[in-house]
Image (cartoon, rainbow, N blue to C red):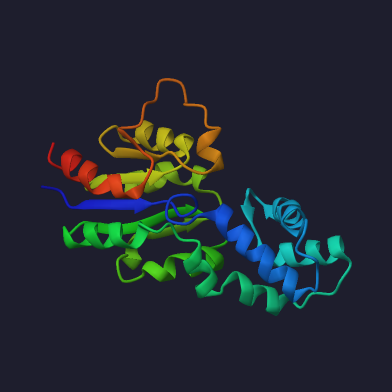
Length: 221
């Protein structure tokens, strides 16, 4: 039987990005001496302006924030906030670690397939480093451009992809019909998702607790 590899997206799969933004609003408002009321909306505005090549760039965020609130902000101070493991831990989904631990105990090899700023994304997954294989951690500036290449890389394995973006899963399935696509339907992108024509995920879940049973069933086929 082929070795089973499970690759997880990060945002809205292992990590509640919406919750993290609210936590950040409180921390950065205090750091910059801004009133908290309305600051979350300012942060959201700056966050989307700080996206480059379709992913978030913390350094760009710092520059735009300074312009928006007309106050000097020390970039290193902001970086420490973004990479604060205590804050990151508060925003991980509560079931994430226990599910990864359970899957690891079944000798599945676990990894990451995500997009975004590599340093920031690695700070998030560092909380789960005991369960992940470094060779299976893949973070790209634009994973849509890399998904076909990655699927080909794992052609000789039983590959499972867990993602909140159905478009990524659809490309992966088109590349290799033998992989198992698991759509985790949570977060703002999944809520607004339009299913690509002709594609149906192999499984749809709303919480990672549902995943181990699905992996066991699909892996036994």
